Image (cartoon, rainbow, N blue to C red):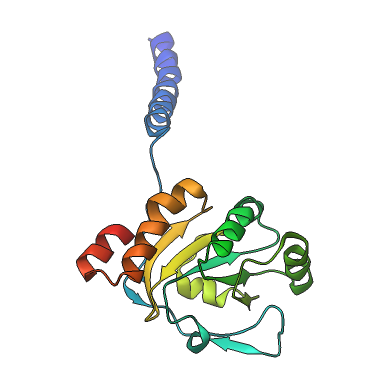
Length: 191
């Protein structure tokens, strides 16, 4: 009887371990990006942040483009931001207006990075304390938001924007916004 009890105590943790491994295995390869952003289809949060290039100049939402644009949250210390940067330059050169939010970064490091790797941003603000990031509902960097010409957030993109994500997500949304499609069409392509 004592031998059977010992076997049982050995089997219980083993079975639990195997169940956990099976659960992890079934999740492999599945898209786990689940984001509920309460900003979607709402106004971009109000802000007054210093310009990255001129900290004495405060920038507010009043200075944002009056056309659809991409708001990109980035940092010089962010490895994925460095991977994303060349594609942001490509987008910028193709005429996509991009507003940068430099997140929890040292001014010198951010400026050095842009001077070395080129600057894709039409405006770039500093969010040194991360308060605007909190208002945006950031989960990390990089993250981007497609904002319409009225200042409403229409799309939230987690992580790096590359050519595939741009063509599948960002471009259809920005095109619908530029063409002033019906609101239900915009919601469909921008989700």
